[in-house]
Amino acid sequence: MPRPGQHGRLEARQNDELEVQLTWFESHFSPMGVSVVKQYHVYSSMLLGKDKRSNANVFLRPSKILNTVCGLTNNADRPYTWVTPDTCLDGVCTTKIKGVMTDKWYALNIIVESERGFTMAYGGLIIQTKWHVVTQAASEQTLRVIGAVSGSVLGIVIIGYIWLLKLYN
Image (cartoon, rainbow, N blue to C red):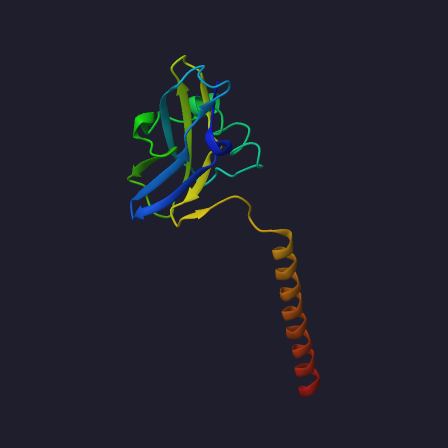
């Protein structure tokens, strides 16, 4: 079985307004020499407004999984492109995804295929064309700070309102 490099981590960055560059590390085999990579299938799927990520293990939701080979072949139309391993440099592969629309969410992923026909999916990536990588909405500490500040501001406004009522009565 091919094993995705760097535990299946993908990286994406904007090249221009309508183009994303997707980068990943080459796959390897264990034990070494069993097979070689035939090609990488690159998937790019625009997500709908109702597509929400349910948890970290299921890429989107149980009915639309985009981080497994079966999930990609069943839930994505077809690969955006194919990349051969001879185009990878120093263990790093890249491809450009053109025609992305602004203010839209995209799920990107890679399936590696070996010469023996075995396949394995990378971890996947959800991006918005505003170029924020979505891994976690906010940390618990951030939410506590926002709650404390909001509560303090609300308290000051209420006290100010009560003082104004006393002043004019």
